Image (cartoon, rainbow, N blue to C red; front, side, top):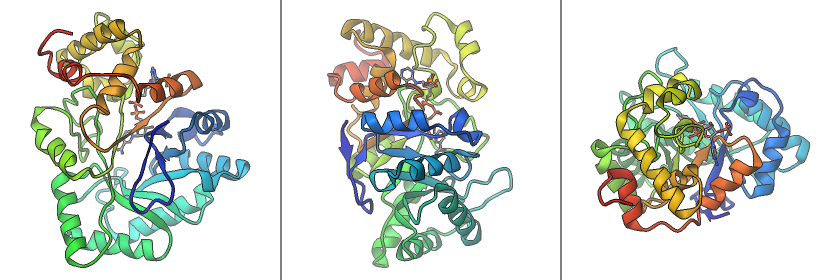
Length: 321
Ligand SMILES: NC(=O)c1ccc[n+]([C@@H]2O[C@H](COP(=O)([O-])OP(=O)(O)OC[C@H]3O[C@@H](n4cnc5c(N)ncnc54)[C@H](OP(=O)(O)O)[C@@H]3O)[C@@H](O)[C@H]2O)c1
């Protein structure tokens, strides 16, 4: 396993984070075997959110049962609108945080992110609040999920001008697939596609740690269907994945991933996972992988050889593989 450092987190963070927005956990059911397996494989970081139903409670029970809190990096998120309009305000964030701490059975959360932004709220208010929560010892690193790079830059300018701790993490959507629309009904941010080249350039320049969510495009690159099986893809993928990724462009990318996987003797998901680490960004990948085999395959992808030309061809189709 490769690890990275995130300012404000007192231990190394595995480059693969296990996503907890998965059926047994969001239903509040125990997922001890899956979580044990992840930790045994070297995955020490878990991506959760107040908005993921029973996921925090499921994770919290496991942390306590196993006594592994000190070995684990918890990422959680707050302020999701949940159909109730903007919740980017102190009251909602504090409510979410105290509930998350209770469910996770912990005194602090290592990485705490706003799940959405509300651009009507001045960044200064948010930076001040998160600095206060940090002073209270309730959170370590903090940042935004589904925040544009411009808002993060503005938040960090404010922090610098006021001698405060800046955002240390961003978590947008990022994968080899082009996300053709926001599948969640507004408020989400992807850095895929030509129109987001400036965002990727900013992350490359700043090296701000970035936790890519839906890093296998919600199963588009799972290998559960082939690029010539579009009908099967519609049976396998859920409505969110179809809305986001079901387009010619992505089936062409999948086809190129299949060709490269055949050449290298690996799986398409390993090619897709490796690709996000080939872009010069300081990236971590949140992935929902339910078995030991899949977790290990995501980990082994980190060290898969991939040339710049191969990575470029996967995305653009320029120069045959
Ligand atoms: N911040 C946000 O707004 C936000 C939004 C969405 C997601 N997330 C986070 O990101 C996490 C992951 O995103 P996601 O669940 O949307 O999609 P994902 O991780 O991109 O895709 C999950 C799919 O990939 C399959 N898979 C995983 N590893 C594999 C491997 N090595 N080989 C083959 N198939 C593999 C899984 O199969 P199996 O299920 O069969 O194992 C599942 O079908 C979530 O759990 C959540 O924590 C955050």
